[in-house]
Length: 115
Length: 116
Image (tube, one colour):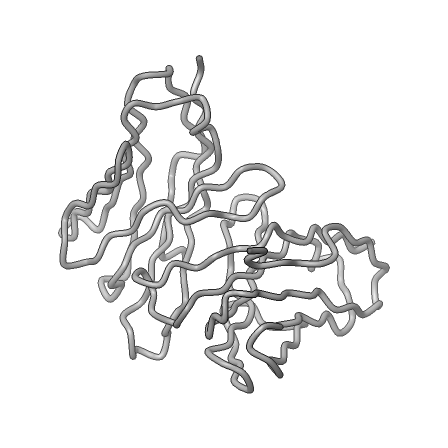
């Protein structure tokens, strides 16, 4: 059981480039989300989805787009990369959007550097 | 504003002793609190949670205590083992149906080192 799979694990971009971070889960989870982790700031929610075709903004959505065309996949798009988007990105999923009684499963992260 | 705070960036304890990790929050509308553990180059993994209607939850060596009046929770690890060395994140979940369904708000994390 692969759980939550993120690709790539590492990426270096130049300012202004665009790219897509991939996230896939094989647990048939309804809820998926993207976080970024920065030093001294914990994890911050970027976007989330409560099911296929439904997405919404989190705490820090600017500069990112998401879509949820299938239950399994939840890609995160950087439209025009900026150095402030240098971070480690984590994708997570849970069976339902239920908070503490539906703990989220995290992927191993994508480390992104913007030059 | 930081709604969930872990004021100790690091903690070092001896193997076999108790580790106590602390977390404070400001929003009384949180209904679940969770602890995640993170090793380097891996994603966070769920450790233990507690509902806001309880004051204690125990799972093996791990116990979480909630003090709602003080808006404070703590994670106790007894006995601590070298394999417990990791970053621990406290997280809070807003009440279901409040428009924040499923969202988790994380603290900054505390790095625990357990020395053999």
